[in-house]
Image (spheres, rainbow, N blue to C red):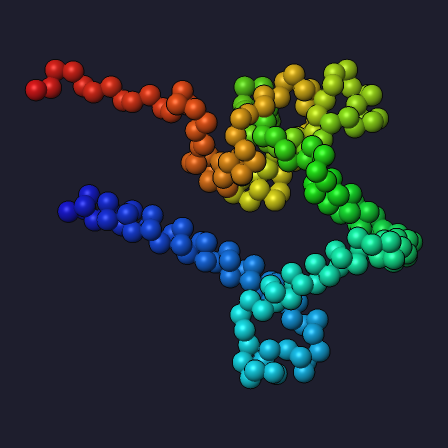
Length: 216
């Protein structure tokens, strides 16, 4: 009876747990984007016009704001305005350092020719004999490269189950094993604490357990 109940309990968790976590994350993102409604004057907000709030209205407004900003920043006049605004921001102590770092990371990640988060690699970290999954984030690092004896690459080693934090290490290129898995599969592997392992070929599948001999 206990074994049967345990099996039913696990089966129920396999159905509900992914749905609950997915719903929680989506609700968190929707609530976060809904704060963009505060950009509108009080009289223009949905609750003032319609008498009730519309969940997710902030997402529509956020998309519109991003698109309009992109249209403005893509033309000559917009580029000059952006350049003027950045020059002012870069003159503010502390703010200039944070803004410059975030802007450089954003441009690197979203640039089509960048190397950031394009490959999943496996490196021996934190010591020899222990392997960790990471993401290659850059090559050719100027002074950092010149002061090393080998050609090195930068690798981001994410933590589990939160991949937004982690460690940045420099690894000799010939010591990093490039994997065939996609970045999405790599993130799934990290977030699932190694439970979800992507299979890229039939050879990657685990060998079947041999049946016991001698049973009739």
